[in-house]
Image 1 (cartoon, one colour):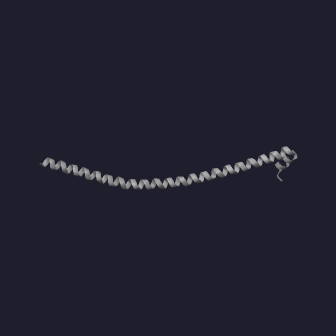
Image 2: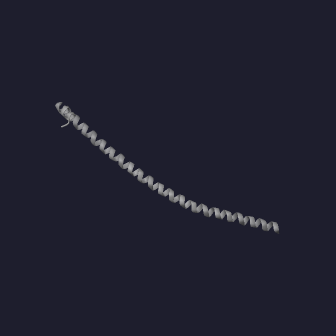
Image 3: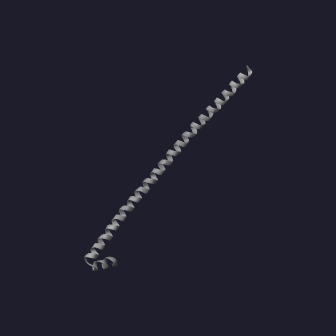
Length: 89
């Protein structure tokens, strides 16, 4: 038996209540710590999932932007050709 428990037992019912209160606080703290650990693990998992989704969106945007840039270049060339044809006629 540890010294703290021995001292509390000497106080009788008050010591018993104190021991039970300390045990209850310990149980509550353990539960709280487990919940915090679970939430931290969940947050890490969701953060990794979000990073993967952002990477997928970014890679899709790169392809879309490349196609859009090519379409704009083609449109500019077509407008330039049309202006040149109008000037010649």
